[in-house]
Amino acid sequence: MENSSKKRIMWFVDDDPEFLRGVKWWFRPEKQDEWEFQCFSKGKDALQVIEAVGTVRPDVVVVDLNLSEDSFDGIFLIGRFAALVPASTLVALTADPFYEGSAEDSIKAGAVQFLKKDLEKREFWSRVEQAIWIKQQVIRAVKAEEAKARAEREGAREVQNALLPIDTPRIVGLKVQHGFWSADTVSGDHFGYQAVGEEGLLVAIGDVCGHGNMEVALVALTVGGCFRALGHVGGEILNPGAILQNINRAIISTSLERFMTLLVARIDASTRWLTYSTAGHPVPIVFRANEVIKLRDSKGGVPINVSGESQYSNSMVQLERGDFVLFYTDGVSEALVRADVGEGDQEERVIGVAKELLPDRNDFPNRLMTEIMRLCGPVAEEDDRTIIAMEVE
Image (cartoon, rainbow, N blue to C red; front, side, top):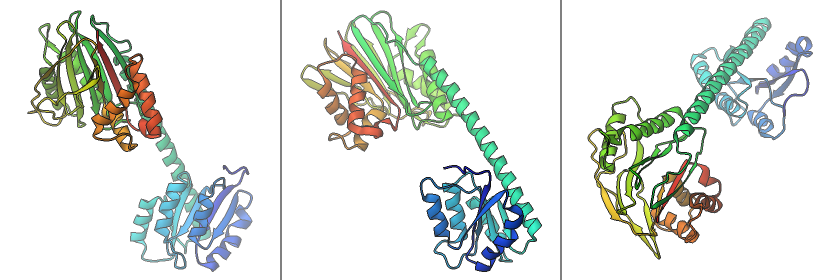
């Protein structure tokens, strides 16, 4: 609750009764039209008021560092006030002549001014007003920095959304669906497609370590660009392992530090061969009639941007008409683990939920994510999530 009166509020937390009595005649007569003063002899009493929902928040809190009759010392109190009322101006107060160490500790805890009790009233008040001004400048600077960061994230999100596929590719013999859900303004997930003639498709799906900051978004965007640019040489489409190798070398050569799991797969609808290579990313799952085919990891498996010497090999599996291939990022599988849904490893938990939704394959990514969110609750939204489903026709 905000202060509804025009007066600003100043708290004093000090276990010296003479000092608190002095506050009444020292400040109140000349400042009572502008300020409302409240005194606490125990820090825990002040904290209880702060922690109570709907209470008025102080504009300034003056804390004695040498509290002897309280279970909380002054440095601790300043730290708690900084966390609970970050907009308040915190002032440390002491009568200790050897205060240099305490001054540094109090500033680190969140105070913006350090005062000695033997200051003259005019000087004391001048320093408090200075502290208020400093706090206002800090708040303005923080807000400006937050606004700048928000604008940067919004810009990155617009670029990300522009580069992610909107429509699913039209490939003879394949029905492709996808879904993408971001946990923050900018995402660490990325996926993309490249057509290989009329009956082939390259798929990339990956997950940068982390989400919500600019470097994560930049790694995802850069890898996506590399997938589009380095997937072919001289007009010839490369195999998935070679594509991963090219992407890894390109990212290693930059100043980006985040690593990314990435899987590249090639599906030839005419021959029904699925060739894939993974850089630490979960392999796809193949649902066939009444059985589930678990694919093995291709050799290598080191995430992108870990080592320039990483090698990526290919694995192949013969698909059949009617097979349903599921690709996903670990935001999908880890949600099931965190919410303790199902049994076994992450892949087995995804299989368990997906099987319950089959054989209906319509709008499958959205239906699968809806079910995971129902089973996992808010945990399902803690990470970015991408699902790609392909049906061999």
